[in-house]
Image (tube, rainbow, N blue to C red; front, side, top):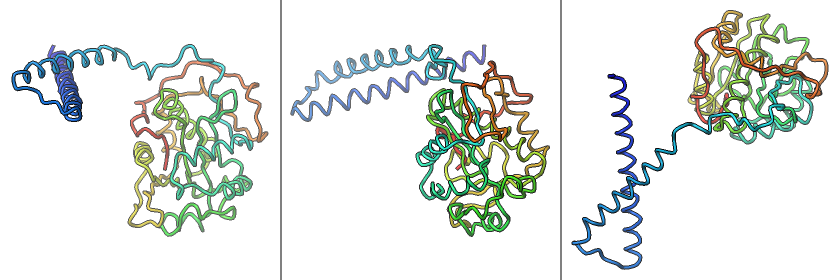
Length: 324
């Protein structure tokens, strides 16, 4: 009963605050109209006018609160076509890469986006650096790029002396060198429409997919995972996954916050255990057999599995799901 009483008090407090806001808005609008029209309210009509404004505020507030009985925007659209289930693809064909580059340009500041022509050279050196989350129509909903880099690039980056945009194909390890990787750079992670329900779901799938990717391609070693956050959502995401802050804007030419994590098997397993298993809703296609995947040939099971430990929910990190 005590908890119920507190909830009622909170609801009443919210209701009163909303009435106060509506009342102030009504008075402001009507006062502006009177001023523009050159009208003056007689003293005898001030109290009746105030009461009428208050009643109107109560009416509007009750209508607004009554409509919020369920967070409809967070519910799935059951009329939507379920054939467009999620697919994580690596390597990616040119169509997917083009969409990922456009999403990066829309999501991040220009100073933190590698030139598209340079990025294409990086991808040609190692076409496993980019993974895209897309639907049945090959529309990219999100992506992450993870780049294995040489120590000659990683060490100056760690010390803040260079910018990620200075990376060239000579700094990137080729596929046959990945098993000896010592430094792994997360260049970016982003989804479309992160404020919407489907965008938030895509963000959770993408983070789960990132750890699936790391386990598959780098789970045999213990590289140092490096990420630079240039946005508050990106910083929140890196903190949530317990990456260690190394240095910040005062020490870096790029003005970002750099985080690191020694990617041991234990660290990887610990984080995966706290994530829901999306394998029943998301197919992973990264066997490296082809750069172009026929999505219509991929079977898609249903029902996500619960996490093994307390779940990590990345929805609270901000409106934009990104690692920058």
